[in-house]
Length: 276
Ligand code: RET
Image 1 (cartoon, protein in one colour):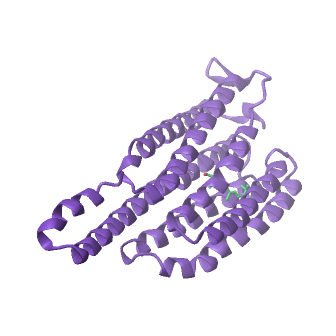
Image 2 (tube, protein in one colour):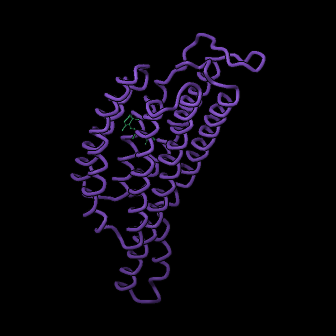
Image 3 (tube, rainbow, N blue to C red):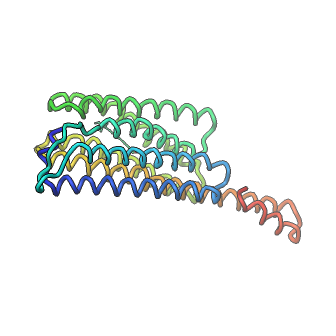
């Protein structure tokens, strides 16, 4: 990566992007973990994993930011490379850990049968890992042709995942409670929309962007996509889990109301609505 091609403005813009990324991921982690008690036990694993994804991302954004800092010196307003390489592996290791987890998050919050949960998590998680591994050699290569070849290879598992999300989960969505069907549908579109961003950003250096502009566009592009795919998506998972918790506790309350005389059930009803 030719860091000296960056203007001071481009360098600082990317640096601020990482800093913002770190702040969002760290704050999102605190939010998910602190709010977990608002969720029924059946959905807590999904919310815990949501926080784990943003925690892993916060750590990697810090590392990326430190590596970005160490790679250059600013001398008289010029960006001068120090010789320490900017480590792009942090981003790919982050994706390798978090992308399969994001898919597991979505599957868990849908509360499918155990066999279905394991099958879908393994197949989608495996495809996601393969997609990231195939993308890395092209990302670190300075040869345009190689970048394109690995883009094509990585697109194969990508298309498979998108297909599975759109078609494979259709039936499962129809089985979700009415109150969350919309939210689940939107979060699937959010996954597809934010994920589409990555292969497009990857192609920036091949479609006319050069020098510092290409580096800055790729780094900022990935950072924005990560914030949407992890933190914003996580908020949707959180609300789905919360609504399902409420719907299920209301259902349990109305069943108790049928089973017990009216004057006794109010106390029991209150107890079941606290998810502990
Ligand atoms: C690569 C290489 C080029 C082709 C494709 C890619 C897809 C990357 C994706 C990454 C998603 C990352 C997420 C991170 C945040 O949690 C590897 C850029 C298809 C889809 C969701």
